[in-house]
Image (cartoon, rainbow, N blue to C red; front, side, top):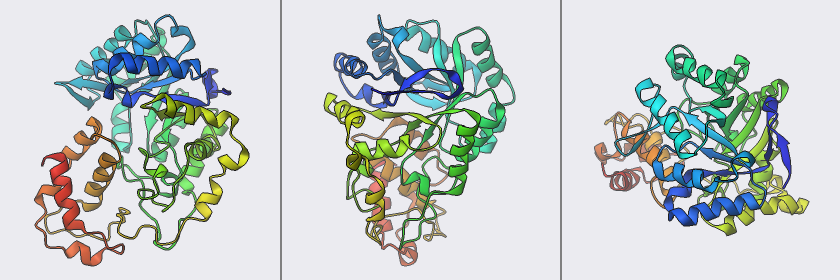
Length: 381
């Protein structure tokens, strides 16, 4: 395993990391064994945004006797309320959620205290002014978090974070498809702005963000490197071709400022496939040829979230509904976070009146009415 400095934190993290989101899918003993297996392969950084007790207990038990050899990204503002994940800045929930994290990890510190998931400028302004950010600094001052980090999907927020001077590292979503869409405050709005006849280059806003991180020595760790597995599947890949784990890992690790890509794992074989990157030949890492040879019109029948379907007489944000549907169906079960964001929409798929006006405007021939029906069934509303 190769290790890289995580920006100005000075921590040497494994190029291949562990995204813990899928741990709760499995038996506790099995997941503990998987984490230990990954650690034995040289992986030393794990992300825990998950607030549920099971996921936190698994990571805590896997680190027993090894705590000093793990670097943990622990999120502040990710809470568990009434059996559900809730992102909040409300201190009556934030404080006990972080204290719970320490207790379940049997630790008095978190290496990387992550300001959890800011994608909008409004949320940024609210978070950076008041009790929440005061609490983050309080934790840092007393050593409960060793370094201050932040998670975001929006390069605009990323650049603001770099400019603070006190945020030392950022967890950011990076893969070839995401890099080609412009900045957005919508969590899952990852493919806007494509021309149907070609896959354009990296968005300038994202390119500048990566450059700023490198210039300011703000380390990047990577989430959503495989886009929930969609980029590994020709049928679901927006490029119309499949990538390999090694190619996607190489893509992420070749972005400026990136230190580690945190992959999600269900099995030891998936860990092995990721760690294989370290001894892969150059031709195995070649993602550029895959992109260059991707077929034109690869979006036929697939929603690219372009917005041509507007306006909807029922005021449904069709593109956003489709994004949540695609994200949900990219995994074996609908993630709690996607459930929450879908439920927060002002108008959901169940309100579709089946007029099909949107279908006449769709440049890719998406059967929107049928998709709305499937989405309503999937989310139960």
